[in-house]
Image (cartoon, rainbow, N blue to C red; front, side, top):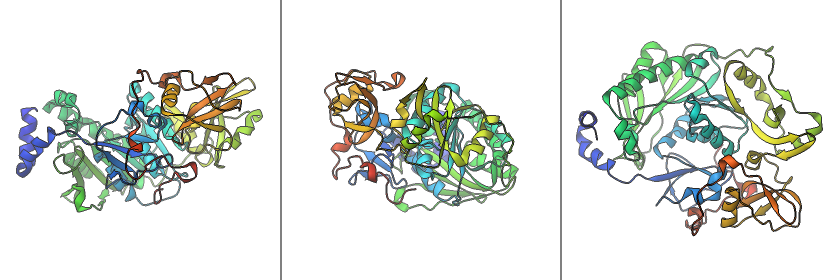
Length: 475
């Protein structure tokens, strides 16, 4: 590790320095977060105490060779970063919240927020780096929600949406010190100059996004670094230029997380020698200045084209009744009806990449169901017959190879594995056309297969049935 880094850590944590350094050489924990609408948390698994749907695994399996991983049944995510759940739970609950994840790719925190939000809320998931937007959009689609907008904008682009957001999460680009144990490249890229550059960039991001947060709204600011210039000093800088209050987050002693206070400002640290996770910093503040709300113009000309009437039958494809359908290019997209004015305002000011749920593609007078619709938590299970596949056939389907369907029914069908939907096939009798997206297909050769990790966890842990996929106590 860089000498300058070690010298600063020794100054920051003198009593724990040796313990800290030794922890960097230890193997990182393997953790993931369950999608509560698609999968049941294994009862005997090692739980992440600050996240209701987070679990630890004893060893890293081949996630690529697990069909339900590709269907958004769970997300492989570092455990400490799941602490945003505790921060989000401290925000005062209001109906129809509009939440922004500003630096969202690859989508871990956005999918987490979608699991915490209600159906009447809206998530705006943004990524400024264009090359990272496609993986963000893919992970959002797999998670299966329609109350989401994906965009690609600089933080400054949001300043014109003054007072729009109830909650803004800024998981800021940082020097990555908290990832040293997991990522050797983070060590190679570290320098004092880079940490200073990160701190300056973070202040610009915070200054640019601050007007978009409504008065009384909440900002969650987090980094995966230990550097005070990127954490405590940025928090103090923000307080010098704006009016807000720090919000405390209740901690359990056995979590290992630390609360610290400086000049009346409260923050939370996860240190690798004290938690089963990586380095992480988070603070939660409540804004006390600015606009109370964003006045959405009533006369914005909508860019949304209503669904052609001849396709109205697909309204029955959803189990929800609060969706409106739109035509975008040759696709039919469902989106929450009460959020259409907000969507129009966003499309007026931002570069919107996608929104809602792509339900079907229409060609002339024919309808082809979309792959992501098969993964939707709002799909009406009575519309398409489902066929359960074994592990090898499920992976062959996701390789976009030919598979045999054991059914006399012809037409569109949903294939699934362990009750988790994987996508669509069209059964022609003698063969079945595979409609798994070419760009998402598994490219590796199939070795001798080992059963997925959840089938060997004591206490079952198999996916939840369609009628009981929601984890009790979770939004």
